[in-house]
Image 1 (cartoon, rainbow, N blue to C red):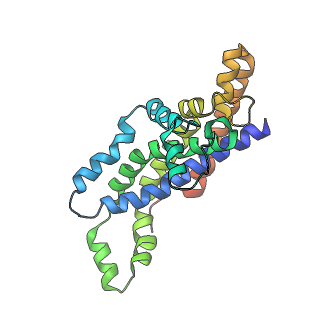
Image 2: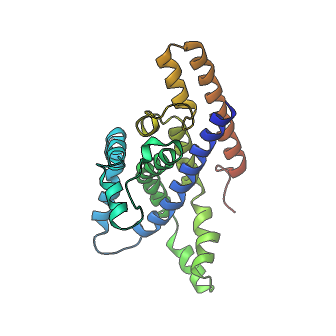
Length: 229
């Protein structure tokens, strides 16, 4: 059980962290004026509009040993000497699950942060430039503090969604025997399939408590509702 809890924390932490970091960069890009920006903004929505199961199935079959186009691509460019069974081994299947989870989480997070960026006053940014502040100083000292509320919403919703996410891990790791790629949610599903309803219920309570603890720690550390000074 400690391994399952640890893997669950890794699953949530890595997916949310990568999603937020990539989304910050994408939101910054989409906030700039450039030719085709409207089209790019529409393209970003596609992973959010598509079915999570469908997206995961595309990646899953793309990673199949001898028929997957992703595997063949890696062989063609020389990264692999021969096709590899990514979805037949717990660690690579779990890592690919993280990649898929980040991909489908980007649209919501990017648009949430983009909305926050558009509320940053232009006159404040211009004043920073007049005072000689560089790009990095302006971003970390002015823009990021103004994004506190948007970041709080994005992170909290991602924590809850990723923790409760079953389809991605179910598709990517469901055929792997044992429990080396399981999180709390996938383990609950396996217990329900076996008819161990008492264990599934107990694990559900444990999972709910773990989410509350993670959210409470985050809110306590970030204090998103406090005024930015």
